[in-house]
Length: 170
Image (cartoon, rainbow, N blue to C red; front, side):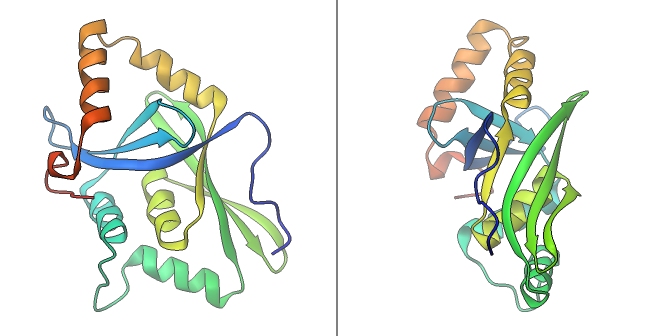
């Protein structure tokens, strides 16, 4: 497709670093890291989405297509291509994302939860981007964590290996 793969200036590319369980709530947490940096972006997600992401990362094929596999097939059959995922807003602790799709009729943006968008991006090889203001807002809210806790969490994330990722190995 003729559409540019890169978003406008002011966006930062992210890569999936891991999927862990929050020790307090036992909720899955998606850990994204800047592709060209050391900043982490944690996003709490649902168990079903965590499972879909883990299956994609591990390359496990299911006997029948799951929702994200189905969406990938529908895009392909209709002549579309997922160009990128954009995490474009953060409101009251909730991240908002959209799919940027090149379709035969032109570029289309589709509202999505970040977890669903990332599950699809992992299946299609599309890039994941965050708007700089969202990144900064997420970092500002993280400042509320006590300095020692923030440093301890950062050190753990930097050193975390596959064996540390709980029931969602990468």
